[in-house]
Length: 122
Image 1 (cartoon, rainbow, N blue to C red):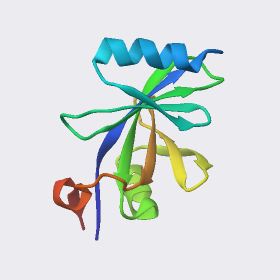
Image 2: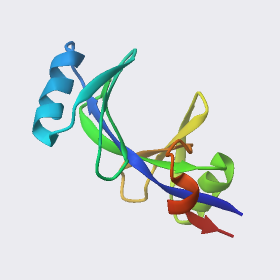
Image 3: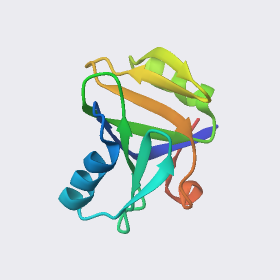
Image 4: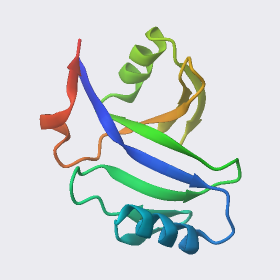
């Protein structure tokens, strides 16, 4: 058995000015931005505890979601049975594609309340 839940949203921005992009999304969403290094800026979600980040990317701008889990391989396999497909392994996580074309990532659980909030799968 394993658990998984919505981890958060990543705002992918094709930009040369990540701080400016993060400032826009910070203002738009009313969430303070903080640098986490590299090509990421974290937006603080005080209400739901979701991981929301602005990411500098080379592909077209879009928003993708992260599913966090305590067993990445088991969750990827579960999602494949629903019709998703693996696209690329990146570090410790998988980039996947839903049958409807949206990209999303399956990542290691990070939320402080993961154990209490996640769905348990057989």
